[in-house]
Amino acid sequence: MDTKPSSTTLLALSSFLLLFFLANSQPSHDQHHNYPRKPRPQRRAIPKPCKELVFYFHDIIYNGKNSRNATAAIVGAPAWGNRTILAGQNHFGDVVVFDDPITLDNNLHAPAVGRAQGMYVYDKKEVFTAWLGFSFVFNSTEHVGTLTFAGADPLMNKTRDVSVVGGTGDFFMARGIATLMTDAFEGEVYFRLRVDIKLYECWW
Ligand SMILES: *[C@@H]1O[C@H](CO)[C@@H](O)[C@H](O)[C@H]1NC(C)=O
Ligand SMILES: *[C@@H]1O[C@H](CO)[C@@H](O)[C@H](O)[C@H]1NC(C)=O
Ligand SMILES: *[C@@H]1O[C@H](CO)[C@@H](O)[C@H](O)[C@H]1NC(C)=O
Ligand SMILES: *[C@@H]1O[C@H](CO)[C@@H](O)[C@H](O)[C@H]1NC(C)=O
Image (cartoon, rainbow, N blue to C red; front, top):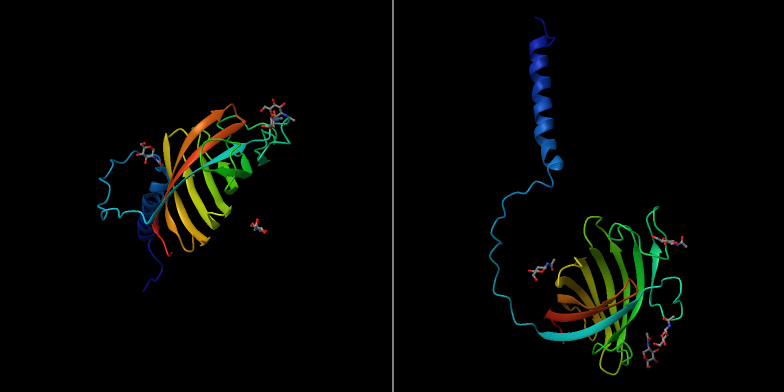
């Protein structure tokens, strides 16, 4: 008996494999297809927050002239940019590290209750948007401890929600949502964010 597969079998098999490959590779080419929006999934009623806090923080970005006052510095830039001035194309590729004062009101010169420390990464060419990862580090008569924030920050949105992923000290194991609002924006050098924190997990 001839055990070699016939050429028709081979042809059938290879076209099957080709189809299989095409079918599976399709979605990755199609990432930007606008699928009809599904209704948002049902969610349990949002519980009342166990703690609500409001703070402001102030970011002064180094611009080549303000090294004494700057609280933030560009530490990474794409090849077409530099670390003095935020790059074109919505600052895509710039990485900024900051150590910003946190105040209870919108006054930059009010006594700081802590520092907002971390970074943001501009991560989209087409629109002004960033990814934030930072902690509020408190060491005041009011609070001692940290709250850590992470998430996408679509800056053109009036309000943006980021996750409060955890806490230490007075904020042991805290979790919740922080709503960010740009409270002031002066050139590319100073901005002030209002942070409305709602914690839904409190262990104190
Ligand atoms: C630094 O801050 C001080 C006090 O707010 C201000 O008078 C001064 O103009 C600032 N300097 C720079 C270089 O921004
Ligand atoms: C940095 O880039 C800006 C434009 O994006 C340019 O105006 C400036 O001269 C550059 N600075 C240095 C030190 O290369
Ligand atoms: C927190 O504040 C206290 C009192 O001012 C000080 O002794 C301590 O070193 C501070 N801790 C940190 C981590 O800054
Ligand atoms: C952008 O703002 C709209 C309306 O203010 C809000 O519904 C939406 O959740 C916001 N997007 C993000 C990512 O926060």
